[in-house]
Amino acid sequence: MEVKHALKNDLLLKVAKGEAVSRPPVWLMRQAGRFLSEYRAVRKEAGSFRNMIAQPDYAIEVTLQPVDLVGVDAAIIFSDILVIPEAMGLPYQMIPGKGPFFEETIQSERDLDRLHAVQDESNLDHTYQAIEGTIAKLEGRVPLIGFAGAPWTIFSYMVEGSGSKTFSKAKAMLYRNPELSHKLLQKITDATITYLKGQIKAGVHIVQIFDSWAGVLDAEMYAKFAIPYIRQICAAIQEVPKIVFAKGAYFSLVDLASLDCQVLGLDWQMAPEAVAQLAPEKALQGNLDPCQIYADPESVKAATIEMLNRFPKGRHIANLGHGIYPDLPREHVLTFVETVKSFSYL
Image 1 (tube, helix red, strand yellow):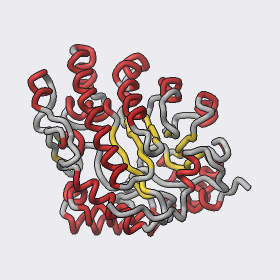
Image 2 (cartoon, one colour; image 1 turned 180 degrees about the vertical axis):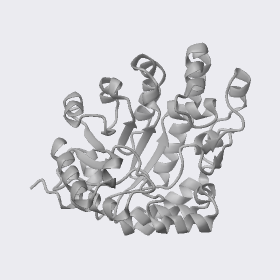
Image 3 (cartoon, one colour; image 1 turned 180 degrees about the horizontal axis):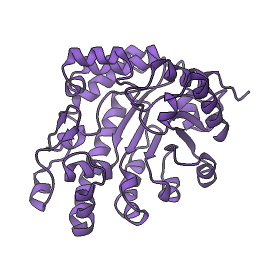
Image 4 (cartoon, one colour; image 1 turned 90 degrees about the vertical axis):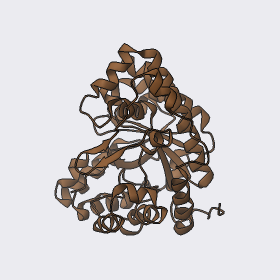
């Protein structure tokens, strides 16, 4: 592993650590994506999304694109949350226009027994290689974010077999077989800790835990089947700061505020003022509605400034409230980023 370069732009890490900054840092969830023609060109050359993840040179290239072309204050390694179930022995396909699909799912103890632990040397090596290569090419310009899916979100795909509006099959298992559910969630948690530690060893400066499907559970079920496993991950990862983004989990803000993490990500339906009161010691990330970026640039600028003024001064990492949409106008995205970068706390 190469030695890390000294960071020239460490705004993101300073906010996460509670240090003084002159302006909020900005990055975008799914910032390496189809709204960039350069990304589409690489994907065409690679042949598929899966090939881009599996081949470090492609992953490095698209990880760097938002830094070079959009001017964000952090890169996030190009990968997919579903590399974890695959590394555990549950492969998936990415169906164009439909998303992930698992030919086999976890429905029984026998299925669970076929899964194996994630080891340091595994088919996750391509992610670690991409991280090392990205760190070398960044040369300290901005920090690199690592990430993983939260256990409940990974569980939902491993049981459901694909994306879903309701994840009713995955939720049904929680109710019908809570013991099996907890066993699977623990296996995922153990694998995720190993994976994140591998990313940290490879060089990432901060990690984000994505609970994309938090909002399909209610408060009681989230407290029982999601929070304890995120808590385990946060407790195990002490080497770098942690961001927890639980989309739709407004009902669990008290529990989320109690986690051992430095940053809470907010979706666009969460009020920054309310979260700041519940978690006064944490930095907050978010939370412009991605659809706002469809508006004309002047409206995007005004909405961005309004958002920035709602967050605590010096405790805000500017972002969207979810991942960027592929058909958002590039110039409007640039307006968002440039508006944040021109905002001053001084």
